[in-house]
Image (cartoon, rainbow, N blue to C red; front, side, top):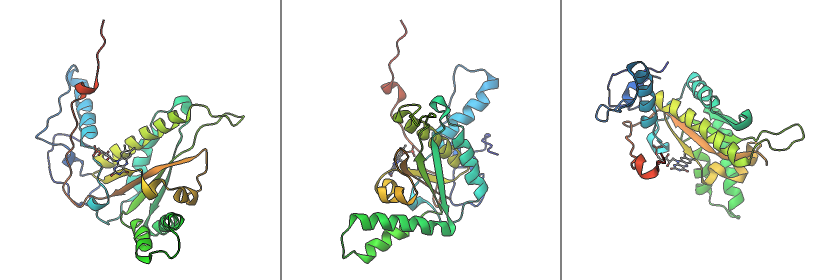
Length: 237
Ligand SMILES: Cc1cc2nc3c(=O)[nH]c(=O)nc-3n(C[C@H](O)[C@H](O)[C@H](O)COP(=O)(O)O)c2cc1C
């Protein structure tokens, strides 16, 4: 499984190795955890490294090398540990890979057709189809709200979306930790009603986008954030 350790390798180009996680440790930016003793620090530092080195890397940063199913299953297992109010576990995933992406191409084509009148541009239409093959793996992200026995929602819809978001973050953290490039895409065809229909998603179930996944074809990217203290207020007395 994932080992972060202290090995510091900065390059993480395409690699068939599932565990190029060591590349995720950036020696120029040591992450300090204060207020903890030495026993807890090791795990906390690894976790902080995994969090800070998670990156969104889209289609242009992925090779077309296939991703082993076991790695995708590991990501899904991580996703499944997300919290949800009333334990509704509303996250639903559909994985498209290999020839299965042909079905996704059909959905993307349906999206194009629903937005355009005849005569359609065959090149543009083919572009929509080709998109499905631009990543080795596409994971459709859906939300299925929990219901009580009378069919009423157990929690407000927004809480279900929050829970799915936590699941996708877990999935993304695991992807990055495995050295995989990935990104949550949430606009255009990724949330198109025709694509949702193709996936069999009807209200109250929602399509919240796709997680595109593959091996990086470039160096691992670094991230940046504005300081947390600019976003925090302390109330202590
Ligand atoms: C809910 C959600 C939806 C997103 N949708 C898109 C998208 O449609 N297109 C895109 O380029 N990036 C999308 N992103 C990725 C963000 O742009 C990215 O997370 C942000 O730039 C920070 O980069 P990082 O993830 O590498 O830290 C999305 C991220 C989240 C959390």
